[in-house]
Length: 152
Image (tube, rainbow, N blue to C red; front, side, top):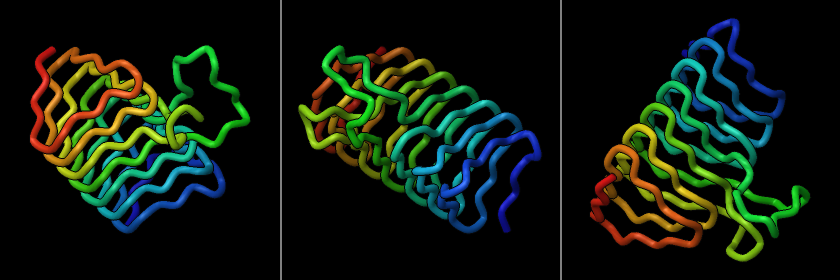
């Protein structure tokens, strides 16, 4: 059963899996695809064409899928973020969508643990089982293999 707080904003067209929890003041855009058993905490924002895999958690005030910080980006470009299953995105983390310089998507594999205040810029490709410690910052087009750990 879905649990959506009355103050949360879910745009028409957003796809929500089973047993999703969306807390107060969270926002989910019309192009987002949220898997089963995902928790989106208070004030988190899921933007653009973002996919979040099953059993993931996005903590308070994280922003996933906002436009890239790249001066060549044009808003009409299709872009987004793809996050695998069992991901943990902690407070105030930011994950930017991709650009036409890549395939338009920032991609994060399964079992990611992204701690508070991390930044993942446009077009990054992160493998499975990665850990980004608090405040870790990745520029655009960074690639991390499976089981990579980055200190902040």
